Length: 486
Image (cartoon, rainbow, N blue to C red; front, top):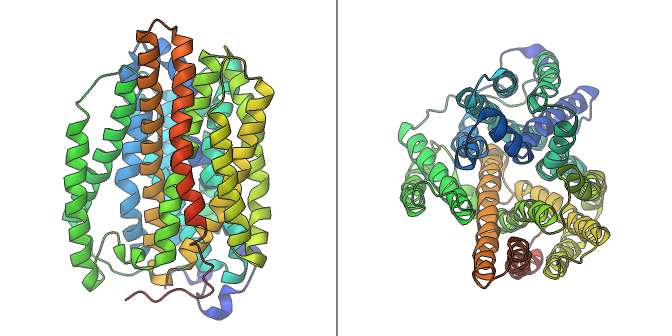
């Protein structure tokens, strides 16, 4: 391997070496991933100010979030190929370089078009970072202590998007929207420079050919599905654009073609996204459960602010502060849950965790205009605790069940799953809210009464679906050795 001064031997002897350099590598990747994932939801609170400052309509402003999600959906499936084909340091520099460039473009954007361009470039780097983090951790950290490290990863995947609105609300209270990018830029550049100097190459690159047809089918499939589900949510809010059935149909047809193409290519180990990961039952179960958990989390993150600002009349900053304790708890619990996983496995964590998630969603079905803010804080804290007990065991047990050759593909599947399930959860919750709200308004109720009834109905839908999490928890197993995948 080139660059022998930074190469980490991936033999079984070295994998158990908890050197200071390995800890620095993982810490750098964790910080970098946290910063890039934070930007996925940071724009939601800023949209009203951006629309006013740039003179754009809500249907246009939504593209700042939609374009980010679409880019993520297109790039993530390709990361499995990138992680096999390129050195670790090269992938890191590419990811953080793109993110830093996109952040600089967004901060200096003179208008809406350039701002969207910056967000697309940002998203390209973000999409690469999470699979890189998970694949590197699976390579460097021995199975006996992965739980603790995967607990830190759960902070990135769950806490970063959760505190995005809080961070944005605080910045917008004291400064303009450009500062959301200006404050992040030096952190991103510092991580880029430090990582370029200190990140070793922990995998052996292979000359894997890329299949152009797979890339095209993947882009159409995942972008079509995510745009379609996002369009459902936008249409439910009154922002009518392209008919929903068009992107959903195109995405579904392309997905069938993409799956067929991968099944053919993986016979010769040439698949862009190797679907043999789903032959491992533990990975399949945990992936499905993560989809439900992510949908519940993203749906809740969009419902609660709408409810608090429309029904309870809270300011954006106050809304963010209500969600802050639960988000911080998830961060604190990540390493603790990881240590428990290393000692006890997933069962003592995931069963009470999923039960708690389901219980909190059922309790949220009772909120109305008289619900005290303190009760909302407690419910969100309970939900966050349940999710923190759930995410780490799912990540660790799922990826740990795969053979090392499929780590990069498993990481890419998890990243794609997060984006798709987040879009589905948002669309589902907003559609239920808007449908019930419109019915209440049609019967003579006020807008606030419509939102109140719609929020309860949306949480009822989420609560019913959350029962699947509880059932699935009994089927998750700890894999001490990867399952054989032929």
